[in-house]
Image 1 (cartoon, one colour):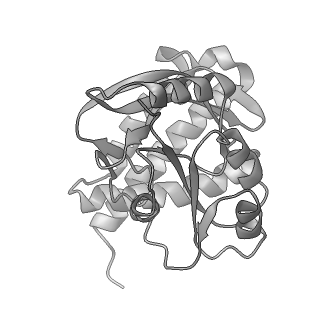
Image 2: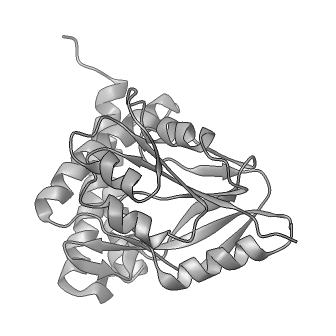
Length: 255
């Protein structure tokens, strides 16, 4: 029985500093699809030079819809969705290849454990690890939610879990942290208001306090040292602003 084929899908914009390392980490795949949203750097040239099929142009509808467009371009039996700032570790690559060699089963998708860096440090506790993300799934059984940010893969069938880390090189500096918080809290607030949820100052205070306790104490973010405290405060602050933005969106001021 032949081994199943794998397509890696990747959406990009100005990721010349990331795309080569990202694609190198998934060199074992049969196909690489890069859907680019108007890069002005060398992202597309680098991806093509590494053998990827690059599709350029189009609007920006949000992460969920854009990844759905990339999925529609895939031709493999299985699909691995990865971001440009992520790398598949060697242990995880071996696990994925083992899945491809298995005969057909009821498992239609797999969660991966994502290990993220924050301002130069790998965060092994708190809200960020193990960050379970469903990224590997059988084509035809999975689809993306239409969320603007924090999109999800939804699979029809049984979901398993693979060992090995998906390495996430995110937020290299405090400046990046503040910029990302602003963009992502806005997108997440829009998603939640569209889903019928509402925010308020009270909700912002209560949810942010709980986010800090959960991240720093319950999930042992304190074990990550000084940056463990910084990250817990960052998670709490993001939660606070998300609920305030939800309130503003649901109850806009006149003018």
